[in-house]
Image (cartoon, one colour):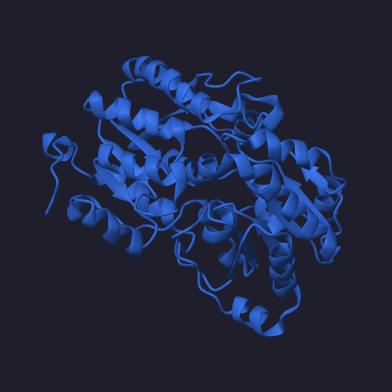
Length: 379
């Protein structure tokens, strides 16, 4: 029986790993361990470990990474990754996985990938090869170089990995697994969503998810204020979700808590998937607006440079961090009939909701000999 180890730091990686874990649970030849860390453990970010427990997912280890009152800086992001890197080596020695499946551009996933590679444990990487700028892109590409095999979301990312010197035999294009979770989320009634959010989901409403751009920390207060001003000007109901804890996030949280726009610290995968089914637009700079909304035919108003370089489905409107431009983008997303017709027919460039089964097939069948972990740059 092969055992796969996962690390989850926040809702973004958990939403992608859960469909894979669900498939592993169905397979008698596979087992898994899940290490929970990061903002899953923090009250100020909704203590989302409770969602994992509610989902019935086995938690093998809890490894704190941030203090509840941790410093809001790039230096603390680096220190937290360093603390976790040291701690996860002990968990790898204890749990003895056959494969570590890492992902994306998230500090804890980077740390476990580095540790596992040093310990000659085969490392798979989900959604490498994408570009987005800032520290996220650096983490993602660096992790690709530590990983031994790859699960990019589309051919564009796969080709980039190969240009980076990764072995084409170990690059498997599978799609984005978060789509599996969102598209297959059990239906929640409109009445329950109203109770949950306070929004009338039968009317137009928007979801706002805005994170920091780590290379523009000094501008974060102006960025979030421009978004809030634009949303007020459009004057339709909105729901703000709290950001992750990248450096500068406290400025966003402070601005969110100073507004009368509805807000929630977090949503479960099922809750978020159901809200997307009814939303009129997603506004902000979350990767969800690039990876996921096209599957629900929901327009995205993508603000600023956080997702710079990623392939755009036709439902995405790019705008700068300026309130009037954001307002115009939202109005186009809500009312422009030609654009809305295009959204109805758009294709998601990041998958079809069947990524997890493709990933699990590879995890089950890939040879784990020395040839896999002997990495060389492929010309």
